[in-house]
Length: 459
Image 1: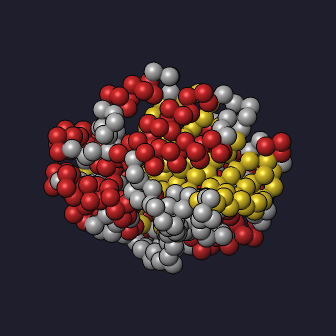
Image 2: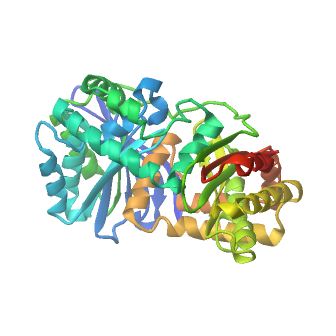
Image 3: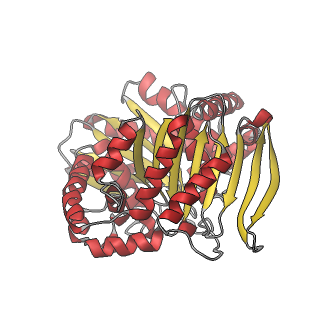
């Protein structure tokens, strides 16, 4: 079992100046699962979770910047920058960066989302100092040369083309636009062909300097790691690059906001020659800080989160109308989305949408049964624990928690939140979320009267 702790150690220099503040946020039994956090005077936060029983470690750096921080003309800059940080630093070429991790059998990658970016490496525990040095060097010493910007532009344009060729992926970008419009959250993370072609090295460098300040970063490491050693190695790497503030600085606070989406009844279609029609029927969801998110998670699991869910049973098992059908939630700092996805033959799209709409209305009006809720709670609890069985997942959890919530929650606390959800709470959130008029996004060979009929699904 784990317990919460607020043990704090403030270290000082010989002159009496505070140089670091260390906290034990979660105290694990016998040190297993213990989460510690050190905040350096320059505002850099370092969190670790210790698992002495494994032989691997995952090291990551989370940046408080995503596509929602871009202006329309900068759309795609965050993801572009993610690529460029792998292209070389003052100390390493692009080949040096990749070969250093390859040589020890590790893996290194990065991802960009709407509200954050993460760079990480997973290695043997004995190679953790190397991973720390390489990833920190990338984050603090990237050159962003004109020739690299030009070369990587082609790679990103190919990535955009690859996404466009996958309608099952592309429809999710369309749904974000349907629900959120031409806003930072509604625009694609990858950007567009026009915005990527217009981005210059100078603009990307300015974006880098603005958003990769130590106060905007969270360093996270999980596995067979020693917290104080990680702190010393990270601090040395940042100081070597001259990337730490010389005076005290306050870390950037998590995003907040109280925006509530009111979008309803919108329909956006892309007529494309595909074998399947790909559709998302959805409505506004909950912000990631909403206390009702645990009940929404249970609702989502029961409605479309597995093979025993209502949507899977009604659409696939009983009628054989689709291979893939599921529901999902997306939570942001100030709003959220709830969607139901299905991929089916174009001739069956209206039947699929009617079944999905009927199920949403049924659950909104009458709720789920106690048995469905109990099964969903068990499924969600089990999948939550099983999803944290590797050091990469643990690093993601503690890094994202610090960046997005500013606090840590133990696995036991998460399980307690899930199992404490009551049927009444699930039915209440079902009425609030599913009771709204849905919107629809669709990609496929949908035209003429068939396209006109799609509006009936949200009427």
